[in-house]
Length: 180
Image: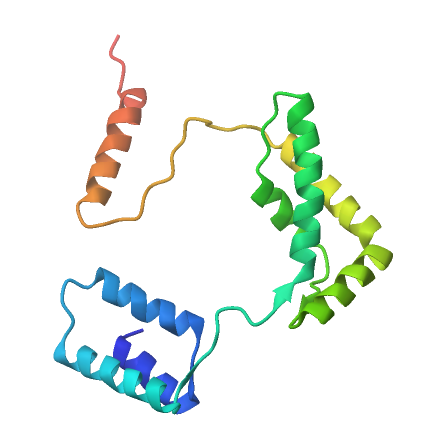
C-alpha cells in the first residue's frame, strides 16, 4: 500500500493503526527518495494528527494474560529439561504451540489482568500445564533436519543472486553426472 493510500485511509477512518504506521515507516526506510506527493501526504497526516482529526491508536492497549502464564510455565519446564540434559529447546515454538491451543485472556486494566490471572490459576492451570507438556513433547520428538541450514536473509537487490549462487556452489557438486 502506498503512503498516499494509507494517509487517505487514516483521514477517512480517523485512526492511524499500528499496522499503517509500520507500513509508512517501512516505505520511508526502504525508499531512496520520496516523491513530492508522498511528502505532501505525510504533511497532511502530520497536520491531521496535530489537530486531532486523526488519532494514532497506541500499539498495545491490552494484554493477553494467557501469554505471560504460558511463558512462565514454559520457562520453568524448559529450564528444568535443559539443566538435566544436553537438549536445547526453542521457547518461542513451545509457547506458540501451547497458546494456539488455549483460550486468550485479554485485559485492558491491571485489575482486569489480576482477575484473569486468578481465574486462569483456578480454572485453567491444569490445561496450561497439559498444553505446555504437549508442546515440549512435540519439540523433543522433532527430528533435527539439516542443523547447518541458514535462513535466506531479506533480499536487497543483488543479494538474492549471491545467495542463490552460494547455494548452488554448496549443493551443485551433488548433482554432477558421474562418468564411468
